[in-house]
Length: 214
Image (cartoon, rainbow, N blue to C red):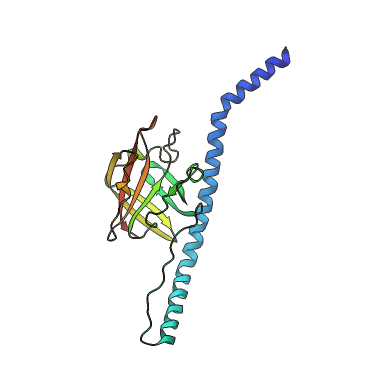
């Protein structure tokens, strides 16, 4: 009887502690991803200037070799590897800093923000969409995204660059409204996407911000 009582107490304790252990583990995984993304950004910042010179010098050599008819257009890289850290999003007003992974999959969005594959690359012309869950824990993922207002600043670090965006549009849309992903070739915007309302979500909270400095 005593063993049964002890067992029931332990089971009750585990049930009580489970939400805390789950959040602790999720926060740990998020910190690990953020550390990996930060390391990638640090390496990009250290090597970007050197690599840029090397690429342009190689192109110059090719032009000199081929003479005046050479095409001087550099071929741009396209696409990201799905699941890889491609940047960091920071919103100081929300005390938010998250790694950005490529591909809005369930696995990627568990502990990070995710770049929606097929939308513009971060920092390039068009509309780059970034999605994250509206976690129930205060401050986790995009939980506080509804606190943003017009003019607030969003910083994206990617490829060794620090891109500063300013919020210009906030809206609530139907989950099927894909128009929020539209973009023009002459603009550089990011679209943050999460669920709304916080509980039993029926719509999407959309925050769009335009690049003001890089």
